Picture 1 (spheres, rainbow, N blue to C red):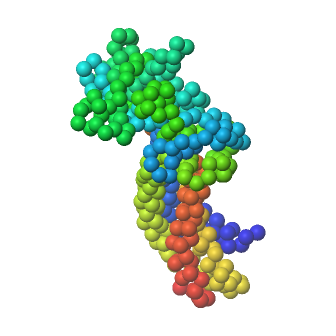
Picture 2: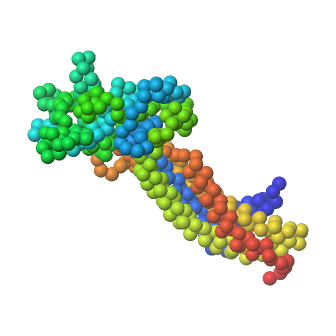
Picture 3: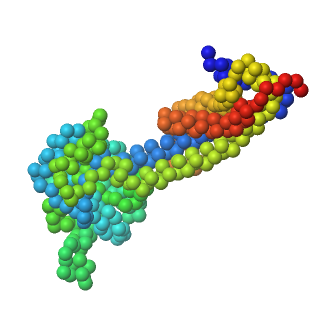
Length: 409
């Protein structure tokens, strides 16, 4: 039996002679309850938004991207490319070419980024097809004709109609290494392509990209050897780091390999920073609530002065007295925090299943606030609560441990 813990439990359950101690104890428990519940719920909402945003960006970002260390493009031998394809853990590999261009449709013009992709692109970015809401996903047909899949923002700005078979997109691509920069027709290569589909999943991409066959880009640029990226999808059960390490051995120097989260590192850092700033602010609120623990225990020490003297006379050491009140403060706050966590779990489950709190305004993506509970958040919150409770309890507990034997009034 843990004697200090048993005494602390008895003090927690027993009625105090001074009503103020009871009230302060209840306020402390409630403060920890609401603070912990709010912290867990808000962190879960941040997790939900983080997962939602990452899932949206995953449509355009592969598991692994290979770029040149210097410059926009690079070339790779067939031997190395085939070795990458046969690397353990690699599911599919796709070459891409990305370049800015001027696109024209029905006398309207727009600056867009053309992304040329090969036949394996849909294997690498498996969910991209699901984002094509209008038209078809075909990039080339059996006759060798090329088609474009346009971002929804660009399609709206240009007034593109995928059913208007006589209207093509005209693409003006800047010539590389041209000696003629005075005349428009000498500064740009020109080609036409039919817009067969429109994709929509995230405004940043909808307003920027047009996906075309890589052969179309090669004809426009006049190069069949230079590419912008190699995009790789890995098999289930494999980790990006291990696959990247194997590919780095094949490629050697001159290349940069990025896992999915590193391809938009700034966005990921901003989201993580926002989450932990909120965590710090709510932790500060809980820290302020911890002053209630100091007040409640200080008053309890005064009330239990005779009990402390009795325990000391029976052989209790200062360390035992210290632990009694440390346990008392911890039970007071951790109990409220534990119930707060259970309450937060219930709210999060209800939100996930029924969407009890809707998103304000009209959203085509989600109708209610997303939530995602993570074990690390619960561990972090519990650890913070325990630390704050012990620190707050130590001051009155130390005072109680220094008390001398005193009987009578």
